[in-house]
Amino acid sequence: MLSSAPHGYRYVKKSDVGNAYYEVIEAEATVVRMVYEMFTVRHLGIGAITRSLNEQAVATRTGNSRWDRSKVWAMLRNPAYVGKACFGKTERKPRQRITRPLRRRGGYCNRSSASQAQPRQEWIETDVPSLISETVFALAPERLEANKRFSLRRTIEPSLLQSMLVCERCGYGLYRSASRTSKQKLPYYRCLGSGTWRQCKHRVCECRTVRQD
Image 1: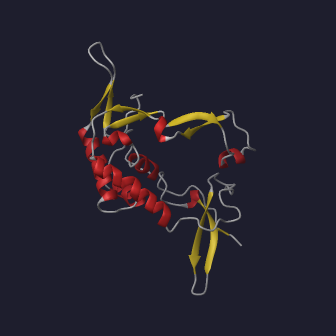
Image 2: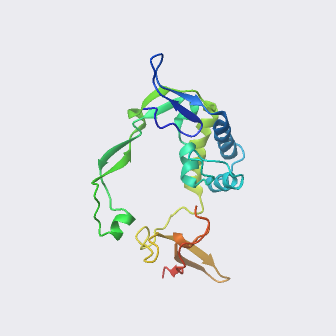
Image 3: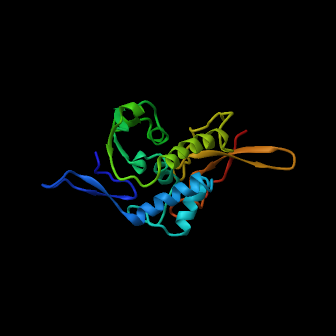
């Protein structure tokens, strides 16, 4: 249950003299504390934290210098950093829905199962060295929930084709966006592959935006 050590730890295998355990990697632990400080004290968003880490060329666990939002988001939710590594957070269960990539392939998938989140009370905990205090860790989910409720990107009124459109050129999904003129707000769909903020640092598609109307 400890073999997949998160950023900040090194997994040490079981030996004849002791059980397996997490060993703190101080350089990575400093990054973890910095991320929590930026999020809970300086109130930077996940996107701003991601950009800051990339601008500073902070290495990820794999040695890659590029961070994405999902890595930061997962770090802010991992109880290992407060001293409780957890096993059983997800479970393989029958697939519940057809995702966008599956829809492009006609709804067919070689695997009939998918990972689904398990209730907190079903997780199995084990003690590991903590990197941050419980007070700091408790602030992170509060801010994540507040961001979810009050974010400008929050979808209050769904669009007709939301989460259904796929770019026929590059295969990335189309997301909702909008622009404003002096008289009105113009909603449209935009291809994810046309953005320069992606990990590859350049556009992979020249698809134009599509007006929702």
